Image 1 (cartoon, rainbow, N blue to C red):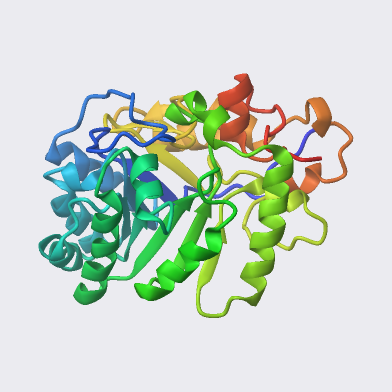
Image 2: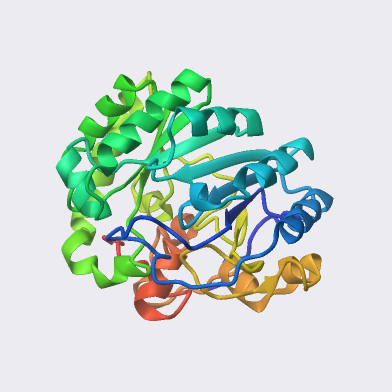
Length: 334
């Protein structure tokens, strides 16, 4: 059973760009904490921006690692912004004080996402393995507000917060956050090692999404966002996404610190190097990307009535747990 991508975009809408895997945290779920990779010079990073401009990629989101540890972050961000790209960032907030917030504003960042996983400081600090990190992250939200930079909150749903995620929404309101991302647990890297302690079982995921979607329907002062294609298997779920199934490799790509491109940060399969390879050849003809865009139903997905909507759920999670891009998402409750 094949499901071809109905529309092929000429380039990703977003490049999620890891400038460095260096980080001052050792988070329990992190996909990249154990990764090592050469880093490029400032001149080479600007060459990458130029190539993204040529291929009309509209959005760059800097992640990591911790992007604020990179000395050239602001120079590259401003260079990209001056070239007309929309620039955003995700950070743990430890280094985001009033001075950094001012530099973020001056560099032209469109928005900054803060990683906060619990409304309880001790739970967040334990999850991030960094005492004091919750207070730093909350202070960073206030610093962004004072600097006039739009802030969002990113929360990885796990055993520490799935029963009381409402408290995260209240925290966002208190600190003038306009959008909260409730991220699914990916099972990659350290997340795979700690999966038994932190991940939910399929029924718990179903119950969480049913409740969270109901909250989303009735919440008017905050935008709640999810990034989990397995939700599409819920009866009556309506999604306005541009593509079905996982968006990685279809709407976005990931850039490693050395310029290697992967479908997403959670799928460590290199499809090419943005500085060395012909981008259009990679984008249109990569066997890995085309396999992701034309997934084959396997296992319990075969004959499932929801497959046309979810396309097997999260490809990264299936790959992390089985080594096969087309296997069913282990979070699937059907």
